[in-house]
Length: 82
Image (cartoon, rainbow, N blue to C red):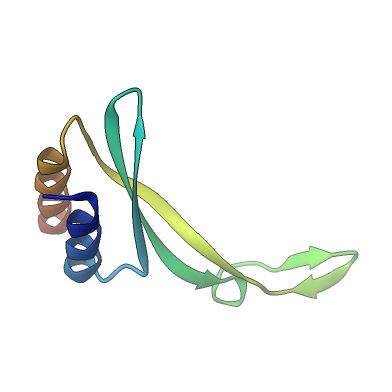
């Protein structure tokens, strides 16, 4: 399984807006992200005393492992636990 396949299948399985894989010191980490806007959050952001709203990506690491196969197994376990 390639990185691209894991990413595409993760997006399809979880319905997230974005997914990416990073590799640090030989270990893979899978991050999923959802598009958000501050107007949908509790509270209000301010800049120079004026209320503002903006779009952002809310990301979470949901899987880690030494192989892409292990990453995919953790994605499936994450889905089952949701």
